[in-house]
Image 1: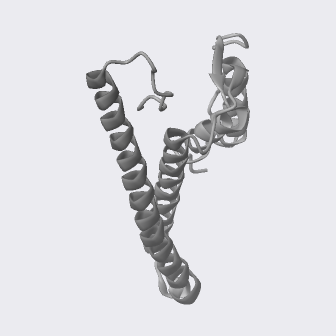
Image 2: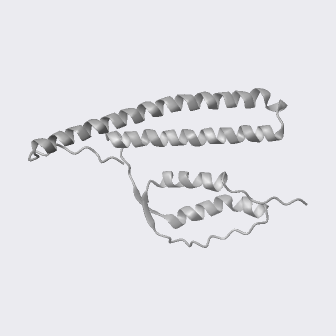
Image 3: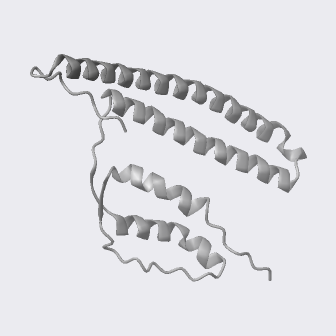
Length: 167
């Protein structure tokens, strides 16, 4: 991550002042490129997502289960890309000073426990034993609690494949 722009040093040499000015220009360019790229990608993702919704809504009845599954996977991945673009937008806002993170100490053990709780029902339904061996006090991290939970949620719901059992 690029450091935030500092106020000019009044005691800086002309060479140092020139280097700081060039760095500031590069930071502005980076923020502009990041903003433009995020905007363009967001537009394309919206179009793809809209077409997927149209396909699902209008011709889903004519699709096989496997095709519907592929459609769902494509939609889920578009959602992940949208989240990535939102992160890029946030990064651009942080780089330019438009936004600021309000991080606070978060107990990582609570996040792990919430993830285990979230997947617990699926594990029990598949007769899979699930135990949180991490404990409640893994350690503290500085984060935004809601963003930390958002980061764990995809792991909890979409990336856990439990074996199925036939009766």
